Image 1 (cartoon, helix red, strand yellow):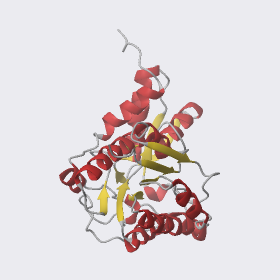
Image 2 (cartoon, rainbow, N blue to C red):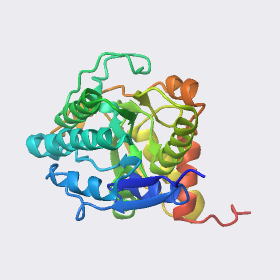
Image 3 (tube, rainbow, N blue to C red):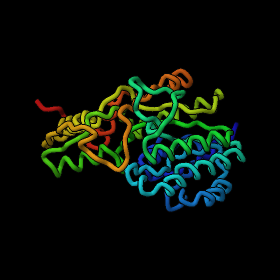
Length: 300
C-alpha cells in the first residue's frame, strides 16, 4: 500500500484555502497554514517550513490580491506573488513534490474579442497582473512538477470578495452603481477547490504535463449583471429588499488599477486534458449562496 500523500496548503484562511481544506480533507495528511504561520512577505522563511513538513503536494492559495492597493505597494506585491512562489517551486523540486499555483485572468489586457486561451500573448494592465504573471514565469523557470491554474473573479463565503461586498452594500444603500463594460466569469472558491481535487487525483494517477491551464466557471457576465444575479438570488432566498443596480461605464468609476475590458478565459484545455469542467457561473453562485443562506420554500 502506498503511503498517504502529505499535503501542504498555504493561504489556508483565504477564500480558496478554506475550500481546499474541505476538498482535500480525506486526500492525505493535510497541513494548512495561515499567513501568521507562513509569511509570504518573507519568502526565504518558507524553505524551513517545507523541509520540515516534506509534502508530496503543495497547494498555494496565498497571494497578494488587493488589486488597487498593489499600485502603491508594487514591491510587496512582487515579493508575495512572484518571489514566494519561486521559493515554493525550488523546494518542491527538491522533494519531487507537485506544486499547484493559482494565477489570474488579469495577465491579459482585455483587447481580445473572444475568450482567451493559454497560448495568447500576455500584457497585464496593472501591478497585480504583472506580479501574478511574474509568479507564473518564476514557477515555470524552476521547472519540476507544477500546475498553474488561471482563474477569475473569485468569490465565496469567506474572505474579501465581490459577493460579500454586494451583500453588505445592499443592506446599506438603496442604489448601487456597478460597472457594466468589463466582461469575465465569476468563479466560486468552492468550484475551484473541487476542480483542483479532481485534477490532482487524476494527475497523480495517470501522469500529467506541467503547464498553465485556465480554470473558471462557464459562461460570462459583467460586474453589474453579476450584482443583479446576487441580489435576485438573495431576494429569492431571504425575501429581502433589493437595491436598485445602476449600470455605469469603467470611465465613470475611477480606480487606481486599470481592469481589462474582456478577461473571459477559455477552459477547453483543462477539459480536454483532465476531463474536468467547472459549472456555469450562475449555478455555482446559487450553490454558494445556498450554503450561506439555506433555502426555504419558494413562496406560494
